[in-house]
Amino acid sequence: MGSLGLDNENLGTDVYFSLGLKQSGKGAMKFPPRVLSPLSSLLERSVQSNEMHMEAAEIKEVTIFHGLRAPPLSIRQYIDRVFKYSGCSPSCFVVAKIYVDRYLQSTQVHLTSFNVHRLLITSVMLAAKFIDDAFFNNAYYAKVGGVSTAELNRLEMKFLFTIDFRLQVSIDTFKKYCSQLEKEDAVHQIERSIQACGVKEDEIVISSSQRMIT
Figure (cartoon, rainbow, N blue to C red):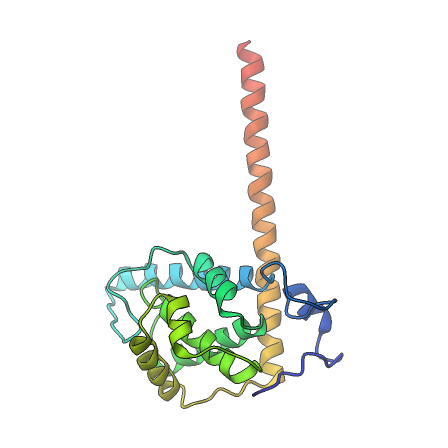
């Protein structure tokens, strides 16, 4: 339905390739696109920050998107699952993040481990319906997301009315979110490098101690 014009060479093609939103060759994508990693990281940071703030301020929220308990799958595991089985384009996950932000801004609700999974499956499904040429029905997405078809139907309607059916995403907005995700990916890689160096340093310390004891 909607088109983001990712083939336009003036729209930051390098960023799209970097995030895995655009392939250099033809054929199905063999590996999860890179965009899933920074997206998961951003959402996890937001959830952790919000839950710390809500606990300190004793804030409690309950919406149709809140579960009784946090699902066993982590945000990254859930996003990987949705990508693997939904068959939607990688760009759907960028658009889904835009939709989630619109929902949160409209409701002033905090993103937490109790609502992030339902918000994700609902927003990804809507993104697929709006920008992909082919998509599955609600019953299929419900199975992928781990909810009933009836519940996903209710979530979809609530989400749409809350954001006032604002599904259109401008190229500028899409570019802004891609840049945000690319920066998050760079930060995530630096953190992983630091952690890896830390492990090596620990190994060196242990190795040196062993030699001293010997």
